Length: 267
Image 1 (cartoon, rainbow, N blue to C red):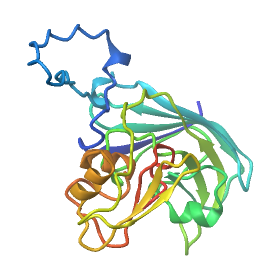
Image 2 (cartoon, rainbow, N blue to C red):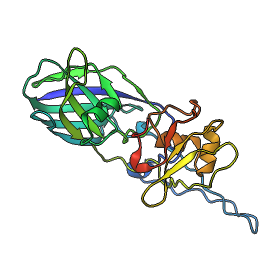
Image 3 (cartoon, one colour):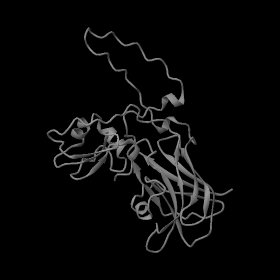
Image 4 (cartoon, rainbow, N blue to C red):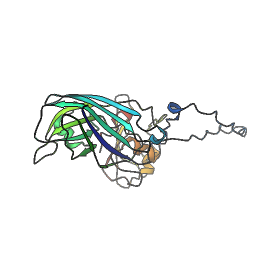
């Protein structure tokens, strides 16, 4: 049996309002019949009960990947599994590489082909744990808090060679995480209604013309930003999982991510 590393990822109960995974877990019951609407009024929206990772059985694999060489020969497998609560564990197995003096581990929101400097600067999770070839289980403490119940913004697991000056000195091998979670924010569409009082920051656009980022202007608030883009504060937290929770107010010149594909890449 190879190396197994357990990394506990704390998950807060905030996040996207649409993190409905119930359809993937069990057949849903038919919704109750709605009362007839008054003539000319819009039909009522059915209430949706939104579960979290705790609805998945413990030890469910929700992501996996294989290590490949970055700066050295590395092989092995990685899985992200549920705990039965709101956390996840990271399992490394069959790890093999040429021994180095010191190693450590991190999980990055960036793609595996990002530069070493970028990977060093964008540590989604990191811990001072030694990863060695052979049979080993290393429990790690909670080394950070997610502010969303959807951890799929974490893209790359990295085994580093450490030095006395830098724990993340040289990336030995990387593994791209392939997530099997269903869409935990279904129906989220970000549309810019345009600047208005209290929300006058700059917007960058993706190639398809959809909003990509928003730079917070002085006196902006999360609620005013959410209203401008047709979402709520929990959706903003889901889109920018590294910035903090709903109770952390927007800061002038802060950049908020508005793109599903770029989750976690903005601080």
